[in-house]
Image: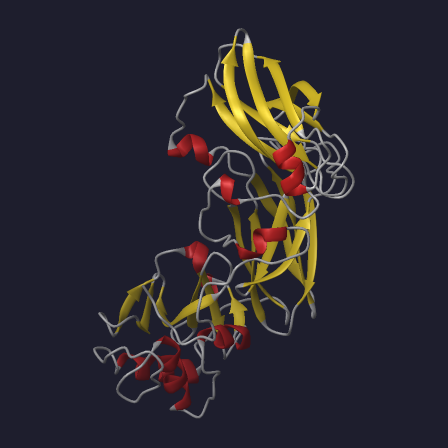
Length: 389
């Protein structure tokens, strides 16, 4: 576990228009599908009965659309995310639900669908009216009673890919696709984080054919958000519906508004050589959160002290050091450059001083102090330099 002095005192949660109570739901930690409630314009409801019947499956419960509470809506049975096999209107009286939610007098439903005995994923879907998205009220594997393994649940998480990421002097753009296998035709909710904070929440749009394998007809996203000058880490998450074991990360991309890296061989700048030598002299000294030397350090404190010893002033905390440094690929890193570690929403929380491929020197944590540290996860690592591109 690494600790850096940052502004953040707790894990942030996603926010954004169209997600409703997702504003209190952490996307970076796996959450159950049941924890993803409908947005403010999506149908509400509950399935009270799921039972096997001769030659099929039966669902019973209630549903209503918040944009037309007194209107009967349609519920449908969706098999394997692609086949609608039955539908019915809400037409059964339920005084308690009507009183509690202000619906019309008949929000209840009962719908039966034919189904063979082979394994399937079956979802009862409340169809949206007006604004909002369809709501998957209940998804079950069949035959009823089937228990899915962790791997099988993971296969039900949203699928997709970042297909493009670029930056201008003032904006960051991410393109890609996202589809939930429990309802391939449904638009997905996509959240873009920048530097650990939610920057945009969107629903996907039509994706003309030909599409990637697994991509639904309404699975495309194209998100542009403003950013300040410097290096930034953008990360894409997709909100899970139906089955699955959590929201899905599509990964992160580090981008720099100041342009791409240089070309050709990097000559080690004299400042780098001095900083690297200075950092090594502190190996064995203790890690203390918030310390900036000369005999105890946190991770960003070691960087600030080692550079400051030679007249170069750096920002104090790791996330600001990352923004100030120029983004470079690992192939252009030389001793004395910086190795940043970010989490799955792009928040830089640790920094070390580059030694060689796979190794840095850093103030690691209370148990290890200042020491050599393996660079173990390229997917969460970004390289930066104060002295070259």
